[in-house]
Length: 384
Image 1 (cartoon, rainbow, N blue to C red):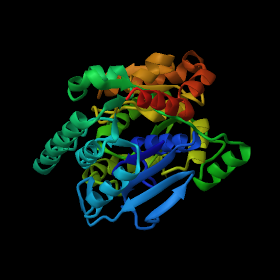
Image 2: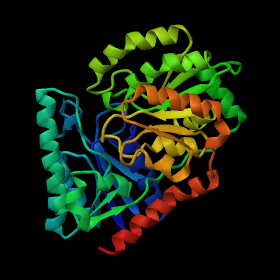
Image 3: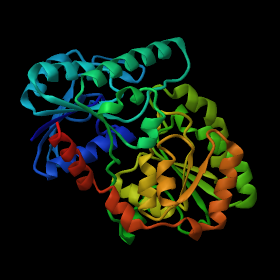
Image 4: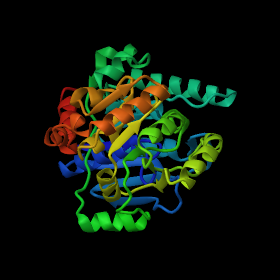
């Protein structure tokens, strides 16, 4: 089977959506399918075309950036070319270009599957309001034209105003999650690279995400003083891009003075983007992962599963979909959205009773193994 995967940002961009798409594309390739990823050439340091882990990656030239989106003049022509060459078109929403691909697939007699990752909710402002409206309309057009839609959980689907319109062609499939194993040498390399001390007492709070307004960084910052009263040597290790995040500069500038104070006192450290191997080391370092997200742009939180695979408990906002990993495993606590007091209380509770929130690691690894997820997609495709 020939599968065309289309999304605006692919590697080296780092987000839950791109990681999902990469894992699934590579799992398809390992299962013998011919996989092409069509994406934007947003990073000029990456090749315009390459084959990586069995997946052909084609990056269209970018002429202009608008907010978090890009303008690619040749994308329409490339759409005809690659839709024609493949059997299945797999689109990852939210995506501005999705209806164009779905339309071409209809015309050329190809099947289209959408994976709906989350709602797009940009920060307040007239321009962002226009962008939100346009992308929502584009997503709706693509959904109507598609043969089927996949979402992460039924919980998210049940609470999504968008997905409620397409219940007749909607299937929940859990996301693919995998991490490489790491040995002591890898851990030592991780410590050395990021200047981490093996003798720091901790405990360590992990937050692994882009520095973006929907991620709720300020909720953790506001909760930290109360946490430090109980655990005065606690420290936040923030993994993920925090500098020059597209569309988030004002948010970063608002919070960085507070973060600088915690950094100066040894209670906060930025680690930057981490490779998969470094993430495996990261989870072995932290004692707890927090996901204090604020709105439906977060639909699950893949990092929760990565943490749980290392028997690290999590605390997450009670957002549809985001709360499901904890509810399914019992490995942590769910707190009200944006509730600083509840977050600090939950962190103190988990740190005080760590063994209470451990789970069945082997079962979690098996459930989210990318090959198993790719097989579920194959079963869905066979019904089309």
